[in-house]
Length: 595
Image 1 (tube, one colour):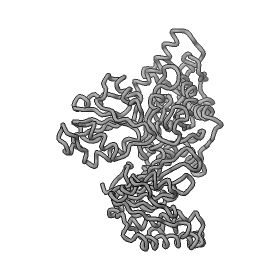
Image 2 (cartoon, one colour):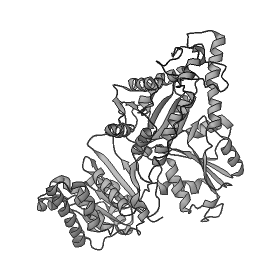
Image 3 (tube, one colour):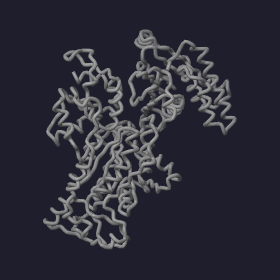
Image 4 (tube, helix red, strand yellow):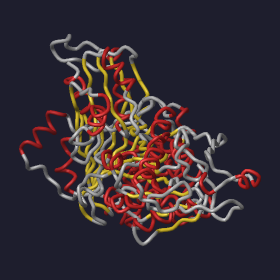
């Protein structure tokens, strides 16, 4: 893959995101696939944050650890991020009179052929009589020039945004011209050439996972969204709230997570599609409502955006540590569905399916995402919004059918698949009681042992019916693998980038340096509970080695697989430092563990 990586770093509030987003939008428009990755501390201002773009003429779905250009707003970025530069990379800094005094830094710069460019942003803005905020455009223009792109492309982008403000537009255009002139004058031999653009990418979307999920929720016919802000679920709430006038949904920022969950379940009970989103700590508070939804057999959709825990943990970083929480949350034995998105396509496609399955089986559904999937920037083909598959299961709305119903039909324990008819309060039908106590067929309170067994069995029977309906995990690569890789969630993009590059090598013992990508299979789990291990069992018997890849310390998917079918993994690649797997890092790890 012809990949160029750009990393913008600095303190929160200095404009790191603005430069990253401007570069991303401009590069996509001229014909490049862009993948964006953000790091930031849990501070409103200060700390050290970054916005990295990996750019290619081919599909790119991951981030690499080494970059071609580092742009730093302060001196901390010089010391913290210098060694992330590739050989021949460029460091752009804005710290006046900076001198490298560390011997190791000087040696690294010389041995790696690093080029250093000082950009006197404040002086140039004073010369132009421009406001400090325009420094973002100036910085972007220098990067744009180093990438070999034209002024016209960048000016067109700025004109679209500020064309209605003539004075501001003129200042922006002046900053672009000055940035190009500065590069020509002070760094004419500095450049990081991009591959030839591919017009295919010009027409695609540039979208975060949260935005894609929000569109998927709207597309699913959701009419109520209740939530309480909690990173990394907050961007989803913000996006859906911003779309309120377009979608005409009811958006409610509740006073806490308990209220948000109960609003959602109440709306679903009345027949309105509704959802809530939170992170781990908020989901803990929602679990009593989760359990109630299962007992009363009310459809419910919970979105759990994972971050490292326990407690507050690392609130602005990523993890896959809540799989066991999602599978084992809420008290008692209850039917549930747990699925996970992996990228922007999943975020859109899986939300309608989450609502459909919740209603068809009258169960709570947990949709797992994480900070990486929620906040990464994807180059995305346009979503298919023409096709809309709304399945409401056993919901009875026809007046003639409603008239035939009896109260005991609602929770009839003799139903073979456990899914009984459902009708809405206020309709012309017999009444039933929807409650959290154990109940008889019409919902009346009953603690007898005979009734308890019947109702528990009824609810649990849904799980086998649901399991039979779910698709098997998806296999990429070899159908007869020598090495079988298994993972889930946002790891999918980086694993596919590695496999499709086709340059995984094995260490000594199996032919050092030999490409074996054709003998590697990747089994990706989207539906995590109830678990379908059969395909894994078949492939594991063929493979010489099985490798589990997860962003948690325990290997939680591996634990569920072993619990279900008794098979363990030969090797595990686990990461739990709050960062996702990076392309080169994981590629090396797979090569070592596969040998």
